Structure formats: structure tokens, C-alpha cells
Amino acid sequence: MKVLVTYSSKTGNTKKLAEGIFAGIEVEEKVIMPMSEVTNIDEFDTVLVGYWVDKAAPNAEAAKFMESLSGKKVGIFATLAFWPDSDHAWQSLCNGEAIVKENNTVIGKYICQGKLDEKIIAMFEKMPADNPHAVTEEKRKRYEISKNHPTSADVVAAAELFKEKLMVYSGC
Image (cartoon, rainbow, N blue to C red):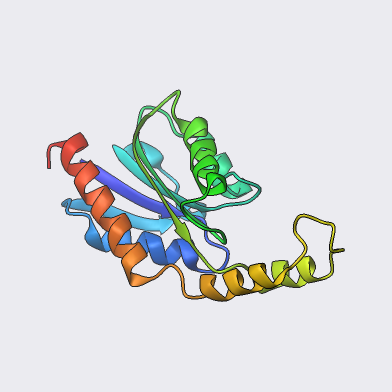
């Protein structure tokens, strides 16, 4: 079995998570690279694909990559600047799963918090108070907390999940 860990990362959150997953999975043949560098997906049996959440779904680059997958075992991991136990986070994972599940076997999903791009925060700061994305004191605190994610605990949890899933789905 050959495993590809691939990712799309805007602020480094998803890359950090991908690197931790890569280090934690116990398979002999594994490769890690940004999805923009993947040229031959056919050589991999399993693809662990990571994205940053954009509008409750994989970012555009990741969505396009995920649409190209067929006949693979696929693990999904994501980062977002919101609580990972929220309905929004779960929907963001399910929307990623929906892209791949018809033509692949989904072996697992993981999501954690990540820092929000400062440019996005600046844009939100300019929005009127009645806009759902307008910055509030609660959101400022959450943005501050998010700067510390993914934490080492987030990375370990993701790596452990996919290590175990690969053991089940690959016979490792």
C-alpha cells in the first residue's frame, strides 16, 4: 500500500496538520506534498487529503483535487477558524466527504481549529454590525484562541486517527 498525504494550505494550518499526520502514520510507502504538486495520483492506493474550510466546504483548489479522485481509500482532514465541535465544522467535513464518497471509500474524517487569515479578519472588521461576519468581542477572543491552533494535541489526535484507520483499512 502506498499512501499520499496531500494538502492545500493558506496560512500554514493545514500543512502543519498534514506534516503531523504524515509523521504519525505507520506505513512503509508514504509521500507528502501539496496537492498542487501531485502529478500521478494513480500510484497511490490511499489519499489523505487536507483542506482549509471556505464557506463550509473545501477551498476551491482542494475541491477540484478531490473531484478527481476515483477508486481510492480517502481520509479527509480540515482546518477552520471556528470551534471543531460546532455544526459548522461537521457540515464542512460532510461537504468534503460528499465530493469523494461516490467514487471512493472514505476511511475517516478529522477537523480542528486553525488561525484565521489576518486579511479576512480585516475585511470582517469593516463589515456593519448587522452582518453575520461582523467582528464582535466574542469573535475577537475566538480569533485570538485560534492563533494557537492547530496545537500539538490537535496534530497528535489527527495522526492517531489516521494511523488507526490505515491499520483497519489496509491490513497494516
